[in-house]
Image (cartoon, rainbow, N blue to C red):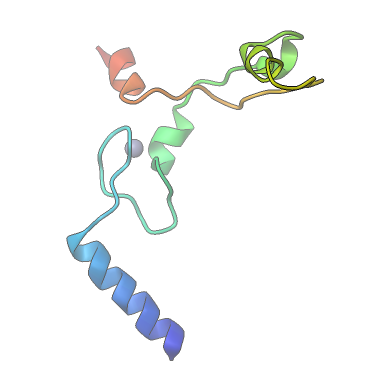
Length: 85
Ligand SMILES: [Zn+2]
């Protein structure tokens, strides 16, 4: 019962203060964070794990001796809109 009230309260708040995707600015569903699934699926992969000295490793090596570092995908706000134009 307590969870139902909490869930209904959250839904009521989302009705007036919806979370928006940082990229496409569409309303996100409650399980999404920061960017929507649609935008996540369109993010380009970095393939940094295939590069010995990739940009992430270079940035982290400044502070510590890092053996490996990677990032899954690139993200820049409105990057997908940039590709569409
Ligand atoms: Zn989106």
